[in-house]
Length: 199
Image (cartoon, rainbow, N blue to C red; front, side):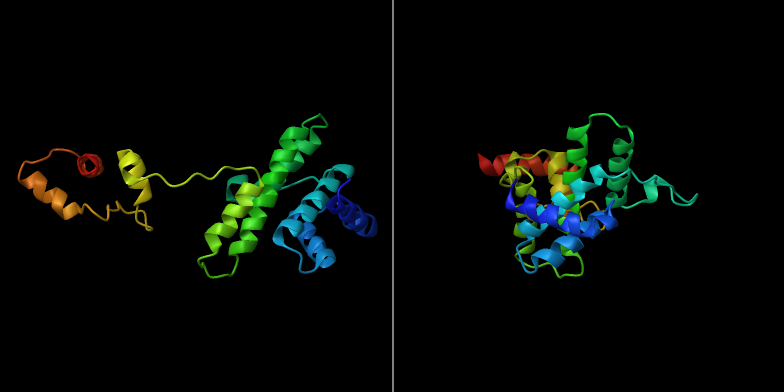
């Protein structure tokens, strides 16, 4: 048993009347016990605390008529999925672990973002949480390696607009269409321009 598991066991023995525990409750108890420890430690303890839910009877989840599952937050949906698995009373340990890991990860990202301004450390903080879950983050590819669809996704406007490549404006593309120099769609034209630049 690791030190984190021992801490979680001690918290559980002291506060077991609180179980089954929500993910937020697990984080709260972990912070109460661990104080100013790193996010990784807090996440580890809360992760272990949430596992103790398996020792308890599953809680029935009911929805008001207006609260359909698709209207729930991602975290609530994960809670429901986890409890539904628990009610099956079969060996679905892998699925339960995966759901639990997803919930811990999303809650951890919420802690990084909630009520805080985005700064230069925010992406690396989120990346650290993702890699701690075993995810692999690759270096971004150069524009010349992307398809038209991938370029459109990369440069899409925040408001869902068409977007534009920083080197090849839509105005230049429109001029080329008017001059009959191209019949390609905008992002296909950008791909050709990037290929020509790379040659």
